[in-house]
Image (cartoon, rainbow, N blue to C red; front, side, top):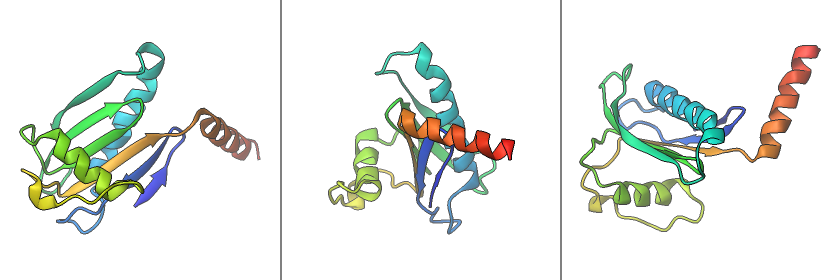
Length: 139
């Protein structure tokens, strides 16, 4: 599934247990995107936060690993802190990027049950989105 808001483009795979994107993971990546947008004027370009969480509201209460920078935010559902991020990133690259190369999921120590990614919109796209929303409020 793909969607957008005023600041980011989002992509998500279906959860292998739910058969659709996880609503709890959607909320989590949205909050991470909001936090990174607010932090941008106060942080350097190489600022990054990473960690693990339990996805409250997920029927399975899945653990999730996340990494957020000003360039990209990723959420790996169903994996804990012990899962090496390098393998998770290669797996996500293979699935989410047009230029991604193949990657054997069997090489992963822990395979995510779902992935989500948020990419920031260019400043021009953000301004156009804000203008469009403003015009709809006037009409």
